Length: 137
Image (cartoon, rainbow, N blue to C red; front, side, top):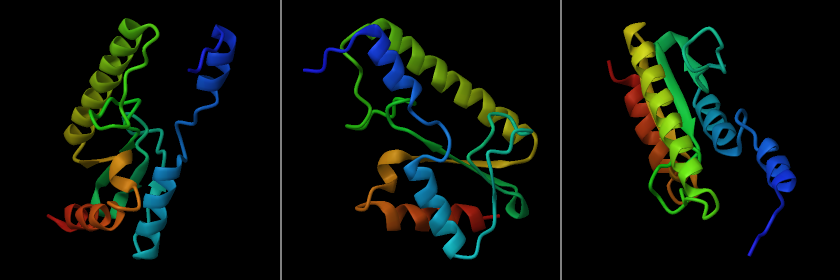
C-alpha cells in the first residue's frame, strides 16, 4: 500500500509530464521512419495537439489512459478522493471533446491514439491504423 503525504503526492503528480511522453515519442519515431514530417505541440491550434501533420491537415492526440480515463486496465480510479478524480477525468474528457470540435471546425481531421494501443503488443497494428486514417481523403 502506498500511503503518501499530501506534499509527497503533490510532488509525484507535478513530475508527470504532459508533453513528450514515452507513447508520444514512440509514435512520432514510427511516423518519422515512414517518411512523415510533422510539428509537435502547435500552440496556435486548439488544445495544443501532440502531433500535427500540416500537409495532410491531420492532428494526432496521444491520450494517457489514466488521465483521460479510457476504461482499459491502465485507467484505474484512485481510492483516495474518488469524487475529485472522477470530476477531474470528466473535465479532461470535456476539454478533449471541445478541442476536437474546434479543430474540426478549422478543417483539421483529428485522430486520437490511446497509450494502451502503443504497447509492444499493439504497436504495429496501431501504426497501420494511424497511417490508413492519415492517407484517407
